[in-house]
Image (cartoon, helix red, strand yellow):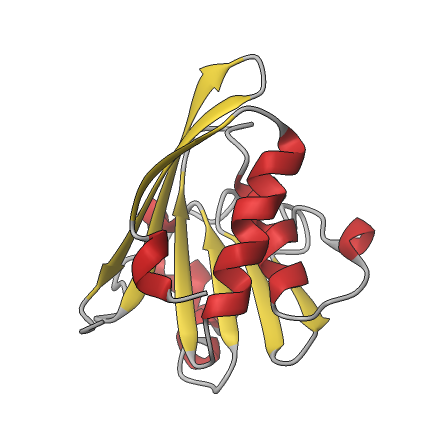
Length: 149
């Protein structure tokens, strides 16, 4: 799947549809790649991450869970994936203490939930905003920033 076809807004009507969109996206990216996820609590950031991890070849989607308390989960598919949750972090010093900026420099896919907490976002990243429309409906806006397609 050409990543140009995944730029724009999408509406999904079920958890499985959100996972399918993530899977298509995961198949289209190569490391190094930073993915910034934005959205309210319960918007579907972890659900989309399950699909992205599957698209990157991770074969245990049931293991993709929100790393809210551990901050970082690591998965291995055709690329190493760092799944980061910034919800509980409050300062730039917290971000440094978990090694976030070092992670983003590695040849991996780094998926960051609650990316609005980043003090210094990367110059080149995939930005995804997820809006909960009620029921199982989600509006997902995908943009590539700082990188030519």
